[in-house]
Image (cartoon, rainbow, N blue to C red; front, side):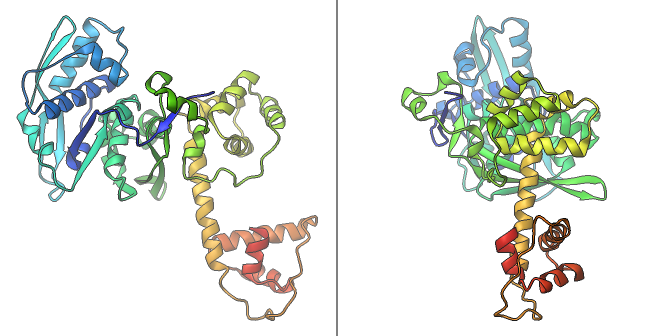
Length: 410
């Protein structure tokens, strides 16, 4: 039956209201310590007190997807990180003002029971909130797995009503905890933090996000994310009530806002043979076809001709692995294509006065190489929002207005 789904509105009760400044902190924790920290904050809000917060570690681990087989020093180190890690909260109106403090004041671990006290400095960011706050469903956030992915989910959630968020690359590094100098180069940050976080948010949360990159010369300076809410969200089978399991049948990739039917589909067996001919193993292709839409896989085959990798099998594996670049790059290109088509349709409103209004259009012969090349040239210029002399002359010769051409060939 595949991976089960549940409605995105299906909530578990572990909902923590955060001031938006708290959702956009600068910090650097591990995935486990951040899950535990948020669970303790939720306990403080639900019990309306800061100290004496007590719970069984095993209960919290089950709710937040932490492996309960972990014991001893590992748990101790993670709980200590939750206590000692300071976070920075920026004043939105004054970039020169910020405050930093740890969320947790102290933690005691006693034979599986955790007792904690929350720092009173956090109270203004969680109590009597008005307007600028974000409800965070902790189990949905925890499913994102890593700390960068959870932080990216939380940040996008705080901007969901706007639908877009833009930060400088340097700010994204701070928000996702990429504080090590190793990740100052954008390529390193993108490979180690960014692409994996985007992939996990899209696959495991109730949000669908598409990043766009702004460059100055060859350097990426800003990243803008388009945000929308999905109708369903992937969850492990044990987390889904039986009635929801019965209704779970949509393939994962249909949740996004991208239209994956932009390209003509090939027969399934032919796609399999194309990948095997390219150097992929049959078992790997079967796994990829369960994870990704066939349009994206076909698009990837076309990229092989452009990239010309020395080791095609390794190149395909890097693209299709969890956290790989396939879906992110495919979504960006499809979005760009949609924008080019939209621009072309706007251009199609122009009228070429040399063509009589009652003229019968002469169709291009797509079997003729020259005619086919002319169609490509006209397409390109319309998608760029203009018409050069060659494209205009071809349309005049074929007695075809731009709107007519777009309707027939775009």
